[in-house]
Image (cartoon, rainbow, N blue to C red; front, side, top):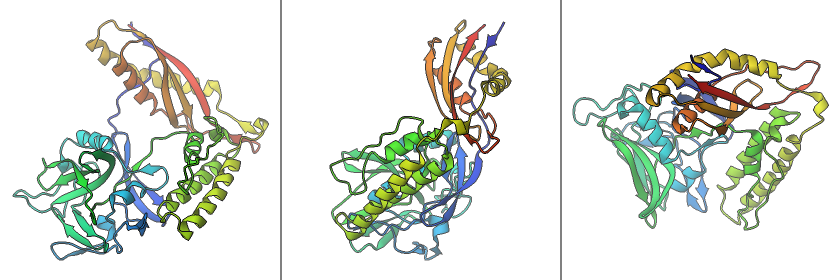
Length: 402
C-alpha cells in the first residue's frame, strides 16, 4: 500500500507570458516564465546618465549597427557599463548571476531555443536565426566599446547577443557576461576586463526576485542608506511584520517606492547636490514605509482558516504520488516524514517555503517535494465587514511509506 501526505512534483508547464511596467519611466516590458524563473522578454531600455561621474548608458535609443540599419530600444534596449548594469533593474527584479543564466541555458539545451526568429546572420549556412521556443526572444544586439567621451563603437550586431551578469571575477578583474552566438552551439560566458578609459557595454536582461515576504524586503532595504556612508542604518522589523500589516497593499507600495528612490540615488555622483536631495527624499520615504508596515489592531483582521488550508492539502496530495513512486524505484523501501513550513499570500499563492524537518534521508526527494508544494494555490482570501486580510504561515507534516 501507498499512503502519504505528500508535497511536490516536477512541473512541465508551458512558459507563462506576462508584462511588467518599470515605475521609473513607465515603460512596459514583456515577461516570460521559464523553468520557474521569470525573465524580461526584452532588453532593458532605462536611461542612466552616469554612475560615480562616469557615463552609464547610451544617450539615445536609436543605434547604428554595422550593417547601417537603425534599430530602436524596443529591439535592442540600451547598452550599459558593468557598473550601471549592476543597479539598472527595477524594484523586485535584479541583474541575473551567471548561475541563473546557466539554469536557463541548461533548460533550453541549445541557443536556438532562446534566439529570436529573425535578425541573425548566417554563420555559415544554415541561418543563425532561432525558433524562440520559450519566448525569451534574444536579439543579436552585439555590444559596444565606449571611451571616455561616452560614444559607442558598435560590434557584433547580427552575430551575438550579449547580456551582463552580476558575477565578478578577480583574475582577470572584470564582470562576467553571457552570450549567444550565430552558430547555435556557440553560447556560454566570458569576462569583460575594464581597461583605463575604455569600457565594454552590453545589454541587460532583468530577472524577477524570488518571492519573499514584504517584511524581509523592507528590512533588507533599510539596512543601508542612500549616501553610502560608513554608518549603516538598521530596521527594527521582525520576519512577517509587514506581511501581516493592516494595509498590506499600502505597505508593499511604500516599500517599492522607497527602494526605487534608493536605487536612483546611487546613480548620482557622490557629494553632488542631486545625491544629497535624493538621500533626503529616500529618508522620508523610508519613514513612510515603516509607518505603512506597522501592524494594526488584530481585532480588525481576518485570516485563512485551518479547515480551508487542509481542504486544499487533501485535494492536492494525491497528485503528488508519482513523485514518491519515482524515487521509490531509485531507492526501494525508503520512507519518512517531511514537515513543510510555508506562507500563503492573500491571493492564495505560496510566497515562501522551507523544509522545517525531514526524516527521509533523501535530500533530492525532499527538494522536489518542496518545489511542487510551492506551486499550490489556496484561492484568494476575502474578508467581510471591512476587515483586513492577513497572510498565513503554516507548518504541515507529509508522511511517506509503502
